[in-house]
Image (tube, rainbow, N blue to C red):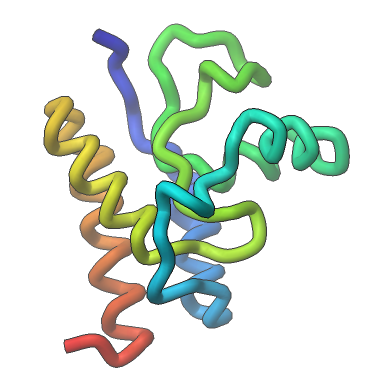
Length: 118
């Protein structure tokens, strides 16, 4: 099983998106999650660093500047999705990637507080 470490640049990026209210509270993550075509289109117009910022996990041992390096996407390349953070918490917990799970959980709590969800 792959191992993941937390992407600190993504954590900072997501925090900045939350602070700027660039998030979606209600979405069907399975429907809006970027597919391979959307990822490729984004990479045609943006840097790998910008692509990486949307992913909470870094795959240990994977080559930099490859899609395999980045995991646990948190948005649609425009806004952070609350349902994406929930999915990250769930998937990371399921696969026992505790650091990513906790990072996603903390960001979810920040988003909920900012959005006034109690």
